[in-house]
Image (cartoon, rainbow, N blue to C red; front, side, top):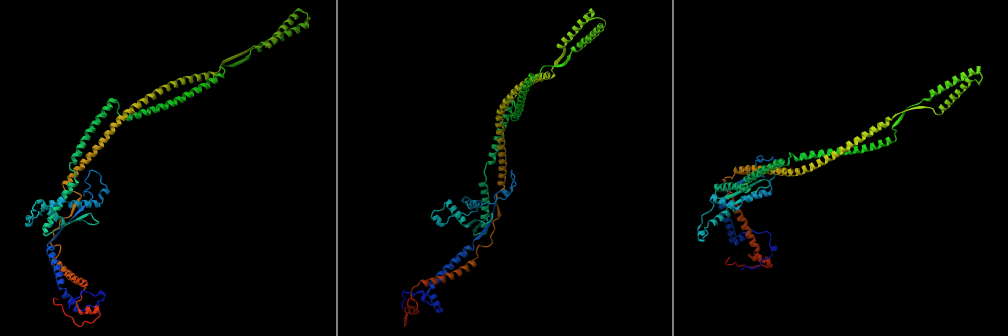
Length: 495
């Protein structure tokens, strides 16, 4: 009976599969099973043959942010400089240096990895050394693995080769050439000579500036214009303070003179020192004489008549004396003595002294004004000299700073060159290339894995083929699908 190209739906199949049907499926798909199983097993055999001959050599490179000996420097080293972390850019830079094309070509040439041209290459005329070198470099690059280890400053480099010694030799030569290239890339040739020449130029400039300073002092007659200017300004300020004080004294002296003149105008120049009445003795004598005359007249009247000549004479004399007393009393004589007034004299002396002080203060103020003017002019001249001198001093200071900087840079360059010559750089071969003594993969492991994979894939292929097949293979499939009994079935002659 021929198979119909109709496959019942999957959901109509029973979940229980008899052993007979499994065997029948195996016989029906034996070609697929043999083909898949043989192909996978053959591939596993080839992998076991080739991979079992591959040996992996490993080396590790430690990357630092700077040299390992930061103490060897002309500058003070801080903790921040010593413990600077390596950035991802630093790691990627070193990886690119290791895998650079020119470096790999040097390794290929040094290790003799360029294979001689084969027959096919001769036929195709591809025997150029450049092509063979490029092909060998590509093979080296494909076998080389350079990866930074996570959360570390180490780069791991691995290389696969059929020979253990060759694998280690390739990595050793790669490490050697990488160190040289790292030194050459990070080194700036000629920097020490450049900094040395610049230092010499600034040294000559310093000598010229010092000569200019010396000649400037000799021509201008100054030793230190800045100090002299400050001293001159200080003196000018002192004289100006004295001038203000003197002017205040002049105003005070003028006010004092005005006050003294007012006091002198109201003070008499002389004063009475003695005021005595000189007529008191004359009146006393006249009165005594009058009394005596009156007594004599009384005595004469006692003896003689009033008409008596001596009595009359006495009367005349008494009348004269009385008249004299009356006259004296009307215009008495006084003795008044005057002398110079000491207050006026003192005021005159004070006024004279005040005029003298005013003249002295005026002359002093004139002298101070002239001195202040002279000091101010001198200070301006010294300030101009100081500006010129300060410009030379600033030039000298800048030249000295540049000279010191270039000397420091020259020493640093020399130290850096010495460190580079001794291969003291910021990368270190943390682990030398290892010599592998066993292949990367075991042949028995690869064969076992291939056998398991061959069985699983072949069975899987059969299952997929059965699932994709839509034809009837047994009478039960027909009965199940048509729901009618099958009375006879003829086998396919070709099957």
